[in-house]
Image (cartoon, rainbow, N blue to C red; front, top):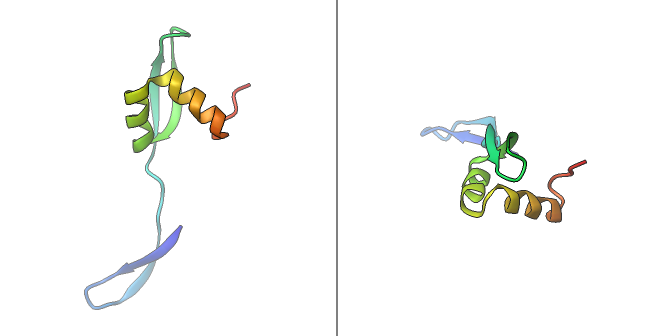
Length: 68
């Protein structure tokens, strides 16, 4: 998404709104290994709240990820 930085003098310069994505390792109890995911800060909170397996299953159902 694109927008403007607006200075106090109302001078506008172009800027990009980038997602808050991080590479994060999560421990999977089912597979007994670490899984590296590229998730947003909100996604990390969701995984912490619901658990990794439930979050991955929900993301698959919504079509966000495809596991082979």
